[in-house]
Amino acid sequence: GIQVEQSPPDLILQEGANSTLRCNFSDSVNNLQWFHQNPWGQLINLFYIPSGTKQNGRLSATTVATERYSLLYISSSQTTDSGVYFCAVPKAAGNKLTFGGGTRVLVKP
Amino acid sequence: DAGVTQSPTHLIKTRGQQVTLRCSPKSGHDTVSWYQQALGQGPQFIFQYYEEEERQRGNFPDRFSGHQFPNYSSELNVNALLLGDSALYLCASSLYRNTEAFFGQGTRLTVV
Image (cartoon, rainbow over all chains, first blue to last red; front, side, top):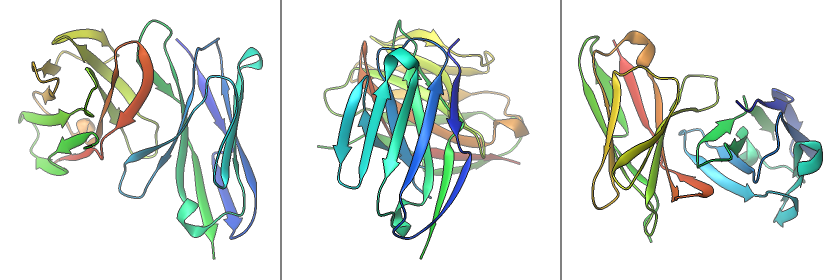
Protein backbone atom coordinates (compact mmCIF):
# COMPACT_ATOMS: atom_id res chain seq x y z
CA GLY A 1 0.00 0.00 0.00
CA ILE A 2 0.87 3.67 -0.15
CA GLN A 3 3.28 4.97 2.50
CA VAL A 4 2.82 8.54 3.73
CA GLU A 5 5.46 10.31 5.78
CA GLN A 6 5.19 13.72 7.38
CA SER A 7 7.93 15.96 8.72
CA PRO A 8 8.78 17.32 11.13
CA PRO A 9 6.91 15.24 13.74
CA ASP A 10 6.86 18.17 16.15
CA LEU A 11 7.11 21.92 15.68
CA ILE A 12 7.21 24.69 18.27
CA LEU A 13 6.64 28.20 16.97
CA GLN A 14 6.55 31.64 18.44
CA GLU A 15 3.36 33.50 17.58
CA GLY A 16 3.87 35.38 14.32
CA ALA A 17 6.41 32.96 12.88
CA ASN A 18 6.10 31.19 9.53
CA SER A 19 6.56 27.46 8.99
CA THR A 20 6.46 24.70 6.38
CA LEU A 21 5.15 21.18 6.90
CA ARG A 22 6.00 18.43 4.45
CA CYS A 23 4.16 15.32 3.28
CA ASN A 24 5.88 12.66 1.15
CA PHE A 25 4.03 9.75 -0.42
CA SER A 26 5.39 6.60 -1.97
CA ASP A 27 3.21 6.19 -5.04
CA SER A 28 1.33 8.29 -7.54
CA VAL A 29 -2.00 9.55 -6.26
CA ASN A 30 -4.82 11.46 -7.84
CA ASN A 31 -5.39 13.79 -4.94
CA LEU A 32 -4.32 14.76 -1.44
CA GLN A 33 -6.02 16.29 1.57
CA TRP A 34 -4.61 18.34 4.45
CA PHE A 35 -6.43 18.33 7.79
CA HIS A 36 -6.06 20.13 11.11
CA GLN A 37 -7.09 18.06 14.12
CA ASN A 38 -8.35 20.27 16.91
CA PRO A 39 -7.91 19.48 20.62
CA TRP A 40 -11.32 17.80 20.70
CA GLY A 41 -10.30 15.37 17.96
CA GLN A 42 -12.24 16.65 15.00
CA LEU A 43 -10.46 16.67 11.65
CA ILE A 44 -11.01 19.99 9.93
CA ASN A 45 -10.59 20.07 6.15
CA LEU A 46 -7.90 22.53 5.09
CA PHE A 47 -7.14 21.69 1.48
CA TYR A 48 -8.13 19.21 -1.19
CA ILE A 49 -5.19 19.61 -3.53
CA PRO A 50 -4.20 16.99 -6.13
CA SER A 51 -1.68 19.36 -7.71
CA GLY A 52 -0.72 23.00 -7.85
CA THR A 53 -1.10 25.64 -5.17
CA LYS A 54 -4.07 26.80 -3.15
CA GLN A 55 -4.38 29.52 -0.53
CA ASN A 56 -6.86 30.06 2.27
CA GLY A 57 -6.07 33.06 4.44
CA ARG A 58 -2.77 32.53 6.23
CA LEU A 59 -2.53 28.95 5.03
CA SER A 60 -1.44 27.73 1.65
CA ALA A 61 -0.57 24.36 0.19
CA THR A 62 1.40 23.12 -2.79
CA THR A 63 1.35 19.60 -4.20
CA VAL A 64 3.93 18.41 -6.73
CA ALA A 65 2.38 15.12 -7.73
CA THR A 66 5.18 14.14 -10.13
CA GLU A 67 7.69 14.34 -7.27
CA ARG A 68 5.30 12.83 -4.72
CA TYR A 69 5.22 15.52 -2.07
CA SER A 70 3.05 18.28 -0.71
CA LEU A 71 3.85 21.28 1.46
CA LEU A 72 1.63 23.18 3.88
CA TYR A 73 2.65 26.73 4.70
CA ILE A 74 1.52 28.53 7.82
CA SER A 75 2.23 32.25 7.83
CA SER A 76 2.01 34.65 10.78
CA SER A 77 1.11 31.74 13.08
CA GLN A 78 -1.43 32.22 15.85
CA THR A 79 -2.05 30.20 19.01
CA THR A 80 -5.23 28.86 17.41
CA ASP A 81 -3.05 27.14 14.78
CA SER A 82 -1.87 24.71 17.46
CA GLY A 83 -2.88 21.10 16.96
CA VAL A 84 -1.95 18.20 14.74
CA TYR A 85 -1.77 18.54 10.97
CA PHE A 86 -2.34 15.45 8.85
CA CYS A 87 -2.00 14.82 5.16
CA ALA A 88 -3.90 11.91 3.62
CA VAL A 89 -3.98 10.34 0.19
CA PRO A 90 -6.58 8.01 -1.32
CA LYS A 91 -6.03 4.56 -2.63
CA ALA A 92 -6.57 4.95 -6.36
CA ALA A 93 -9.49 2.55 -6.61
CA GLY A 94 -11.76 4.25 -4.08
CA ASN A 95 -12.13 6.51 -1.17
CA LYS A 96 -9.88 4.88 1.43
CA LEU A 97 -7.47 7.47 2.83
CA THR A 98 -3.98 6.62 4.03
CA PHE A 99 -2.80 9.13 6.62
CA GLY A 100 0.66 10.27 7.55
CA GLY A 101 1.75 10.26 11.17
CA GLY A 102 1.00 13.95 11.56
CA THR A 103 2.93 17.05 12.58
CA ARG A 104 2.16 18.30 16.08
CA VAL A 105 2.33 22.10 16.11
CA LEU A 106 2.47 24.24 19.23
CA VAL A 107 2.30 28.02 18.80
CA LYS A 108 3.44 29.91 21.88
CA PRO A 109 2.16 33.43 22.66
CA ASP B 1 -26.53 22.18 6.13
CA ALA B 2 -25.52 19.68 8.82
CA GLY B 3 -22.06 18.24 8.56
CA VAL B 4 -21.09 14.74 9.57
CA THR B 5 -22.53 13.84 12.96
CA GLN B 6 -21.46 11.01 15.24
CA SER B 7 -22.92 9.64 18.44
CA PRO B 8 -22.14 9.21 21.21
CA THR B 9 -19.18 11.55 21.75
CA HIS B 10 -17.73 9.52 24.62
CA LEU B 11 -18.26 5.95 25.75
CA ILE B 12 -16.82 3.72 28.47
CA LYS B 13 -17.19 -0.04 28.13
CA THR B 14 -15.88 -3.12 29.91
CA ARG B 15 -13.68 -5.75 28.28
CA GLY B 16 -15.77 -8.38 26.51
CA GLN B 17 -18.75 -6.10 25.95
CA GLN B 18 -20.13 -5.00 22.60
CA VAL B 19 -20.47 -1.42 21.37
CA THR B 20 -22.34 0.36 18.56
CA LEU B 21 -21.28 3.73 17.19
CA ARG B 22 -23.41 5.80 14.84
CA CYS B 23 -22.74 8.22 12.00
CA SER B 24 -24.90 10.43 9.82
CA PRO B 25 -23.13 11.61 6.67
CA LYS B 26 -23.06 15.11 5.24
CA SER B 27 -26.18 15.98 3.28
CA GLY B 28 -25.88 14.72 -0.31
CA HIS B 29 -23.15 12.19 0.45
CA ASP B 30 -23.68 8.48 -0.15
CA THR B 31 -20.50 6.86 1.21
CA VAL B 32 -19.41 6.36 4.81
CA SER B 33 -15.96 5.27 5.92
CA TRP B 34 -14.82 4.46 9.45
CA TYR B 35 -11.36 5.07 10.92
CA GLN B 36 -9.71 4.19 14.22
CA GLN B 37 -7.21 6.62 15.70
CA ALA B 38 -5.03 5.46 18.57
CA LEU B 39 -3.41 8.06 20.78
CA GLY B 40 -0.54 9.82 19.04
CA GLN B 41 -1.11 8.17 15.66
CA GLY B 42 -2.83 8.92 12.41
CA PRO B 43 -6.27 7.46 11.66
CA GLN B 44 -6.36 3.90 10.31
CA PHE B 45 -9.01 2.81 7.81
CA ILE B 46 -11.48 0.20 9.10
CA PHE B 47 -14.03 -0.13 6.29
CA GLN B 48 -16.21 1.74 3.81
CA TYR B 49 -19.91 1.43 3.03
CA TYR B 50 -21.70 2.37 -0.16
CA GLU B 51 -25.14 1.25 -1.32
CA GLU B 52 -25.53 -0.59 1.99
CA GLU B 53 -22.59 -2.88 1.22
CA GLU B 54 -19.07 -3.05 2.60
CA ARG B 55 -16.86 -1.98 -0.32
CA GLN B 56 -13.38 -1.90 1.18
CA ARG B 57 -11.90 -3.18 4.41
CA GLY B 58 -8.70 -2.40 6.24
CA ASN B 59 -6.65 -4.73 8.39
CA PHE B 60 -9.16 -5.17 11.22
CA PRO B 61 -10.54 -8.42 12.66
CA ASP B 62 -14.08 -9.67 12.13
CA ARG B 63 -15.01 -8.34 15.57
CA PHE B 64 -15.42 -5.05 13.72
CA SER B 65 -18.55 -4.99 11.61
CA GLY B 66 -20.79 -2.35 10.16
CA HIS B 67 -23.99 -1.49 8.47
CA GLN B 68 -25.33 1.22 6.21
CA PHE B 69 -29.00 2.15 6.14
CA PRO B 70 -31.09 3.33 3.17
CA ASN B 71 -30.75 6.94 4.39
CA TYR B 72 -26.92 6.50 4.11
CA SER B 73 -26.32 6.64 7.86
CA SER B 74 -24.04 3.97 9.25
CA GLU B 75 -23.19 2.00 12.35
CA LEU B 76 -19.91 0.52 13.51
CA ASN B 77 -20.16 -2.48 15.82
CA VAL B 78 -17.31 -3.92 17.83
CA ASN B 79 -17.77 -7.24 19.64
CA ALA B 80 -15.74 -8.78 22.46
CA LEU B 81 -14.04 -5.49 23.28
CA LEU B 82 -10.34 -5.53 24.14
CA LEU B 83 -8.37 -2.91 26.02
CA GLY B 84 -6.56 -2.18 22.74
CA ASP B 85 -9.81 -1.09 21.14
CA SER B 86 -9.67 2.10 23.19
CA ALA B 87 -9.33 4.86 20.60
CA LEU B 88 -11.02 7.73 18.82
CA TYR B 89 -13.37 6.41 16.14
CA LEU B 90 -13.90 8.75 13.23
CA CYS B 91 -16.56 8.63 10.56
CA ALA B 92 -15.97 10.19 7.15
CA SER B 93 -18.53 10.89 4.47
CA SER B 94 -17.99 11.44 0.77
CA LEU B 95 -19.46 10.84 -2.64
CA TYR B 96 -18.52 7.45 -4.02
CA ARG B 97 -15.32 7.70 -6.12
CA ASN B 98 -14.94 11.36 -5.21
CA THR B 99 -12.17 11.05 -2.71
CA GLU B 100 -12.67 14.30 -0.79
CA ALA B 101 -13.74 13.21 2.68
CA PHE B 102 -15.36 15.15 5.52
CA PHE B 103 -15.09 13.91 9.10
CA GLY B 104 -17.32 13.94 12.13
CA GLN B 105 -16.17 14.96 15.58
CA GLY B 106 -15.46 11.36 16.55
CA THR B 107 -16.46 8.98 19.33
CA ARG B 108 -13.89 8.46 22.04
CA LEU B 109 -14.16 4.85 23.26
CA THR B 110 -12.49 3.75 26.47
CA VAL B 111 -12.39 0.04 27.31
CA VAL B 112 -11.68 -0.77 30.96
